[in-house]
Image (cartoon, rainbow, N blue to C red; front, side, top):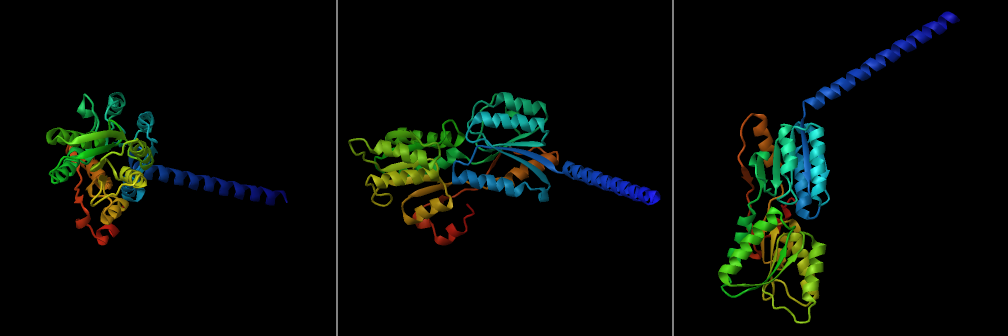
Length: 327
């Protein structure tokens, strides 16, 4: 009886050791596999707009383990301090690359110097930054926001008349806001147009609806020719407020100008409620990967990678174009 118990215990011990050995091998294999992945730390601004959601999805679709990447994704919830905290965490985690969508242009010198000292390249996506040392980032992927604003302004000039304009600005000190505003302000000065008011919509529908409603509620009804919205979500909020106060949007009414060209924005453009949309491409994941693969190969990437973008008007749109829109 004692011999049987001894044999049973010995067999159990052998099975336990074999199991531990197999488990340890699995862990080592997993670690080895992880080491073969390129580790990417992404600091996203948030999810304030349809454009931003599409931008995040593009990044997540490209940087998957199946494609050779390990993605660390952080949502900053519209706060620069959260982005700075995320970057420092990425540095501690020894990522290979940091991808930053900066909420504003200033305030990045110190934390990006820390990344540089840790030999981690930083790639800017969407917006730019203002730093004394431009070697703090490897490359920028996004849009030429001044060019976008200039496309809208050229369309406005075709009206060949004095214009009364309401501007809904995006997040203050962001590259998109600065570029689109610069184009408009320059044209207002050159054409002697009337810039009635500049309102802060923060790139959101809710805030634009609120500030636009407050402006329209004044005792004397403003005469408005153009509402220049710096993204689609602002246009949605502005149209809602305008219509509630009895304005017609589109032909023979107020011309609403927007930027982004989301599917919903294009639908409103086809309906005539938005008169002009300048595209701002959010699907930037493949361009970011192009930069990273260039750096992996030991090459020096270009300073800027600009996405191809179009301008849309109601007479240039079809339901087919809209149905093929990915965002």
